[in-house]
Image (cartoon, rainbow, N blue to C red; front, side):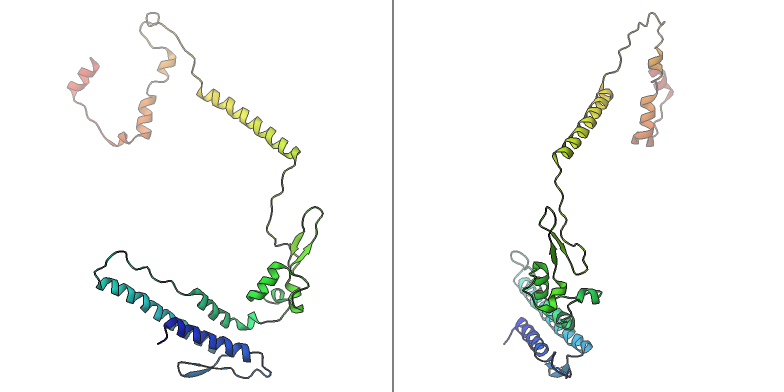
Length: 257
């Protein structure tokens, strides 16, 4: 008895074979494809999409049941050890179904596919030729899409696409010695200014000497100007301001004493 993966693979191979052998036939005759006892004309894209959806639904249903059977067996044994890890779906098979759905676009021989279509689709072979840029070795119908390498003055050249616009990966230019010197000089100036500002901000304040006997016990203006700063900070920034503290008269008298 075949597995669900083998059944899905066989169905996809039969679909691919039918398209490959009969899609480019003259007069475009119907392409019969048999699935689950029914015959479909897969030349029609809507019909082909329905068949592809049926294949996908059957695969994911069987795949879900496969993972569920493993989980049920683990529960039956009393959940020993680690929980079974679900087996991921076979993305390669699903990609083949996607290629079958886009068969018209992937087999389009138009040499200006990117210019004539808003969203062009390339086959793996076409993408390989375009990325490698093997100009002169690819078929004639691909030369219009092959990147053109134009030699520059100092570099290896710029890769241009069919629209004559550069799409190569950008590379950062190295600075010259003169540019590096200018950047370093600016950095030194900024670092010197920062160091001076930090020194000013962290320097000790001036020391003020006075004698309470000379002022009659009164604090100097420098101190009185700072009176209440701590209380204001506590009221504005601390969570203590959310608590109301009530003092008794006895407490206030003892504090005043």
